[in-house]
Each structure stands twice: as structure tokens, then as C-alpha cells.
Image (cartoon, rainbow, N blue to C red):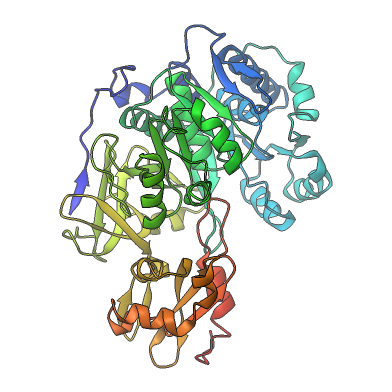
Length: 535
């Protein structure tokens, strides 16, 4: 079964009524600016200390950064690599890069020297922006990669980059580039294997921003509580683009903090987060319906949201979290509806303009209930992996669908459920086991906080189903045993899906966006598994 949502020029929020083709040749910044308020003094960002940055300031400061890049010799198509903490100036730098026609390359600020060296050597940027404390490392890495310039941007916006930008004019005459020109390179999160640079054009990003803006009903009076990092699709593209396109305001917070979120929610209308954020919020006694009375939408993504957290959040707040689905290579693909039933453990329907199919190995669409690979096609899908033409070719089907590597299934009503990564699927005795199915059962057992299911090599079965479990912090968790977990799963699932081994840990390894890194678990437990096999 293959689904494609119809193109629509209607709106939910009373905003601009135009077809998606209208932005085809525009610079992404100019496209976003069409949604800015007429009054340049209108507030855009509200900072933790209470300072307010206006849309006029955003336009002027991003112009200064665009002029600085031009003065440094950064020309359209040159890469600008950035590894800094979240700050208003970091956002201005991104927007300035768009205006200058540069290719923005954000990096997780947690990356260490050898990781930074890899990205710089691969992308070969003209400029690398680092935190002041990392300058020595940055200089060494930049020298190895022949990077022309290294400048600093501190956590509070200070540093040589800001100093040089301050001296530049606050007007940039004309944005450079647009349409199919490259706007950004985002390296895949690397839960398995070496990170690849997904090349995203101005059109890719503009199309996705407009669709999300429309389908989630963004309005000029919206106030977004922005606690996501801005080195990733979720925080930089999904949250920020939609907000700027609406001309609304955002509480621009440096990071997620549950207590801080509770203090700001009464003044907000929208919140976007990863499942970890919601799991922490439901533990706060102050999270109530009254606290969220002005909120109109909570969005979750970047990793699966547990049914327990989904239900608990709705019981406490009266709000049903909207789950959506996407990835670095194309932004968002599917979403639960703004109006209509939002089903737990599903990612809803294809976004308008996006074709989504669940396909067999021969790329033929499967019927509802059948599990296959999720494949997507649309104007939002990336053009290629940076300097990896053969790898790019492998990841697309002959008819142009991108092979996500995620396994999914449709239900009878057209909702999509992601059941796991294809590489995470366990093949035991020739039978396929989808980890999410086993995890969903284990997570309902009293005493379990969360779980991850992996496959480890086995001399007879090929792979053995193995569970890694985090106990809850109560008496039931303290009493939980391996045999209790195994016996519980046996009551619900076929025997070949039952874990042959259970490991207990204090927490699961996650990447920066909350995705469980099962490759780390396989490395840790595979060679030392009690079933005596070797990898």
C-alpha cells in the first residue's frame, strides 16, 4: 500500500494561501522572511533573562553575519562548519549563511576531536566556528583539513566571530542562491556506522517548512517553547522554520530543563520535544491541566514515544501528544493529524506532497498489517550524500523512492507504525523478530522503566533475542528478575520472540536526540553473552 497526501493550498491558521511551487527558486531566508511581522519591533525571541530580540534585530544581525562571511571569502557553495552551544548568535549565523549562499554544517557540541576531524576532512569547509574553550583542538583539526578560517563563538554569544560581525553593515543587499542550491549538510546521527552528510537544498527545506506550518496550524500569535538543540533537524529546521514562517514568538532556551519548562508553559502555546523530555515532564507533580491551559499543541519526534508516557501525559494535561516521523535525509514525512485522532505508537499519515509506501524487498507496496521497509518520495527529500554517489544510488529505488531503512506497517485506517530499523531486526532460526514488538510487551511489566531488544550471535539460531532492561525506581523494580521478564513475554508472544537473555542496566545509551544506540548494546553484550557465542 502506498499513500500520498494531496497537495493543498488551503490553510488551517489563516496564514498565506499559496501553492508549494511558489518557493521553488527562492533563497530559504527570503522565503521565511515572507512570514515575518510587518512591524520590525515585533518580538521574535524571549531569552532566559527576559531580554527580547525582535524580528528587526534578527534581520539586521543575520545580515552582519552574511556580510562577514562574504568578507572572509566565503562564496556560494562554500561550507561553514559550526560546533557551538545554542545561542541567538548561533541562529543568526545560520540565517546569515543562508543569505550568503553558504552551506551550513552544524555539529553536535558533544563531538570530540577525532569526530570533528572526520567532519572537517570530509566537508572541507571554508570556515570553522568553535567554542573558545575548544580553540586549540579546532586549530589542529582545521589545519589537518586545510580550513581557511577558524573563529570563536562562546556560549553567551561572545568571541572573535561576534566581534568581527559587529563591525559589518546591518544590511545585506541580496540573498544569494536558492532553489536547488545547497543550503545545508547534516551528518546522520550515526547510531550505526559512519556518519554520512545529507545534502539539503533551499527547496527541500522550504517545502517541508511550509507543509508543517500549514498542517500543524501555526499562527502569528503562537508562542513556541524552544528547548531543542539547533544542530539537528528537529530544533533547527522543524521548530525554528515553522516559528519564523508564522511570525510568532519563541522562548529560546539553551537546553531542556523540566523545572524551567513548567515555569514557561503557562505563557506558551506550542512545545516540541523528544520522548525523553516528555518522560521527565510526567514525573513532575506540577504538570497539570491548569498549567497547560493555554497550550494548543505538543509535538514529539526523533525517537519512539512509549505508550505509557503518551497515556500518562494525556491523563495529566488533557493534551494528546502529536507524534510525527522523519529523518535527516528529508525532514518530516508523516504526522498524526492536528484535527482528528492521534494514535499512540503511530506516526500518522503522509504529509501533503509526500509519497510513502511500505514495501517488500522487490519494492512492491504491501497491504495493511504487513511489515516492510518504509520508502518515501517528495520535494523535501535530500539530493545526495556528500561525495558518496555510489552510496546515494544504493539508497534510492529505481523509481526514485528513498529507502529509509525503517521497517513499518499500515493499519486499516492508514496510520503508519514504525516497528524498528531494518538493521535492528533480529533473525532467529530464520524467523524475523521486530524489537519494538517485544519492547512494547516488556515495558508493560511492573518494575520495568524501559527496555531495548537486540540480537546477538548464536551458534544454533543465528541470532538470539536479547533484552536490555532499565528497572523502575520502586520496590517492583528492585525485585525484578531475568526469569520474571522472560516468563512475562512468554505469556504474550510466540516462543521464538522471547528473550533468551536479559541484562539489567541503569540507563540505555542514547545519542543527542534520544535515540537508543543499539549498536553500542550489541557491541557490549554480543561478545560476552551468557549463551557463549562470539561475534
